[in-house]
Image (cartoon, rainbow, N blue to C red; front, side, top):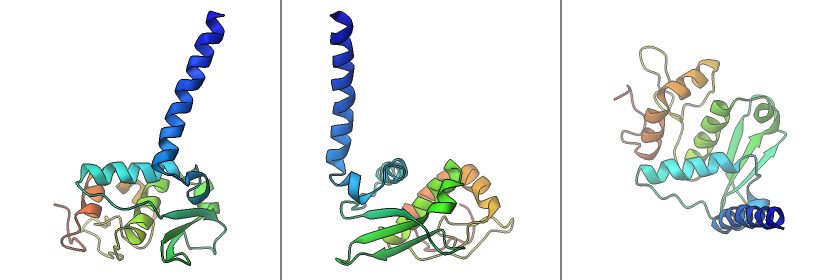
Length: 165
């Protein structure tokens, strides 16, 4: 009987965590696929650390087949709410660093209104996560300079930095 009680308690406890999370994202099952949720949650956490509180309540996202060369796309849905499509083939073949930088980049467009920033520093490192092309080296750069990219994403002044601070 004790084992059953402990198992039931564990089940109830784990259910509470899920229920609380779904309350925070009421339409999570429909509006944002579970595979993307950790990255959206990470974006929201990093925003709060930077003193920013982006509105993600109307955000929808999908992982879909897209034309080759397109990794993600931000466009408003039929009601004008932010919507992001992520390339399924690229997503399924990617690393955690790639996925996080891609989601942050697309949320930068869709939620923060950030345009592309085409600048690199003297070493060829993109100065912003809003760089328009994801190169192989950018995943090393994202991991190495993540703190800078996150800070710059939520404090975009100047809008396109020429160098790292």
